[in-house]
Picture 1: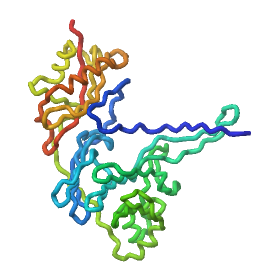
Picture 2: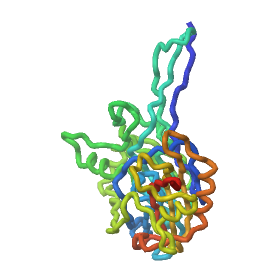
Picture 3: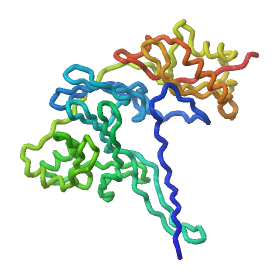
Picture 4: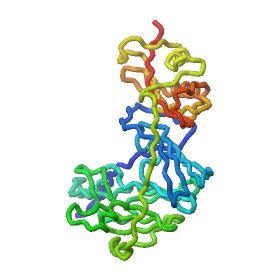
Length: 353
């Protein structure tokens, strides 16, 4: 009997690149709620390199918009269009930034093995291909490394019951752990020279040459590290800023002091809905409205949907996005120390009676 492979892996939909504007087509899915994140400063390379990471989509989780500024002795070298919620290191006097994600999510990926009649005779789990290491060279993404490329023993990786989540950093034994094992768990990622060193869940020490992204050495971590009595890498320390944010669903007014709701109603020839929101004639969902300190829109991601189960109106959406890009917004609600901020909110409108 021959077997047929049916690869039914569901691959993740990654956020697209930074764009001037993104127009969403199709039915909107309301965003997952995340705890707010805050800007912070981190020092690396003996304190010579300072990085300030600023979130612009402060409640959007790991994929939220943001920016990280890299300074060498107070001089700005470059910035990266990303807020780093996961650990990262620098090397080469700030030239390279390397981020590591030890806790990653991935869709359940299963290969169905079928017989000639199309009946599933067994299932085989595919290797997760989540990108867990990102290397930037002077602010430009140079290399990404997938979890599967690291060749970590899957039997040692921690996962949740239903799959879809894994953690692959080293964890010291709960009982009778040695001082070295405790240090290994405290520092599962560290940089020496131009090498990123990772201590994986299976006890491997994986060494990656940062300028090339190439795995150059593998060993049992406890062996070489035990020979170095002084091995104790510096811990990553972040100094977070206390910032007051607008409410989660809040939209700024225009520069002429009109609320966006009233201005949108005027643009569409409608009225602000005063009845039950579920009975409004039209809903505008501004998932992303990025406004800079000059009051201009940098990114807009919106849907315009006639309520009552109908699909978004693509033509009206395009007109609305163009209109938004032409407006001047007030900037007083942009948080202190931010050059821009991402707002979100709903507008509900009625037709003229």
